[in-house]
View (cartoon, rainbow, N blue to C red):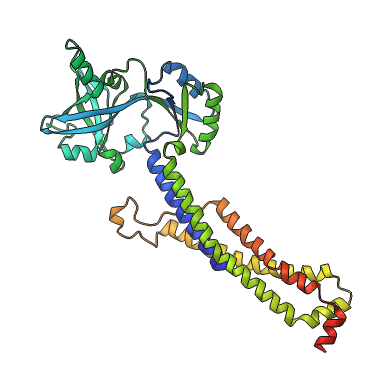
Length: 390
């Protein structure tokens, strides 16, 4: 019983640690809540939507954005065309504690227009691949060009339209994860609207909260205020739902498999208590003859099962939490080939709900395991038990 409880607590804590790590990694780019249009036309009336979102308790930041794909070119690598995901943002919403701002490894996070040229921030891996970097010392900043599909199509249709190619000055290189570093770039919101020719519309509105666990509440509040046929509201879980669902399924599957250890221990308790009933048949008969009722006999064996459960669960609880806390603070078990991962040891996140459920299930199984032996002991007739044993 102790080993089963300890194994469950340790495994659940490790799986929770991986879930929290992946969630935090994705939320460094994804918002807590996002408002998008049901259609592909984007969002209008941006100011009113921002006001509605800011009025909800727990909201600390509301940021409209424009996002789309474009081709990136650089003069020194004219033979290399890279399709990137361009995101237009407002600099005023980029606080000092923002993961993108703190993730800058070269230069600064600055997409504003300076000296008549707008700025751009790219992923570090993309910058290294294209040999581009922000300015520093006597070295001038690299310049890149972005070409959107909508701009290219419009230039073919209307020969008198302005050039679809827009040039930007590299201001900084950020480092998040490879999936973002190699394909995402950031520019100013108005520059993105010009690049993709969206006018005053935006792709969506991102919301950040004081507590990301309140995302479902904020989603429900927005549902009450916004037309469901026009606006779609997504939480951080909805944005990566398939991945999170797989991780939760893995957690529940591992829990069910390891729960078999506790189940086997419960069957052993049934066998052990049944043998005790057989061995103590005469003693039970004497107690009955002395006036003990069937309920008294049942209580004796139920309490014995409860004692086994409390002792086993307590030992497992101490052992499991001890191992989990040791791993959490001292990282005694490293990940194999840790250089290929973003962490060097198994992550651990102890959740009170998991510990409580495991403990309650273990105690419940121990009590259930003692029901059959208790009933069997209570059914012993005093006279027959004393006569047979004598």
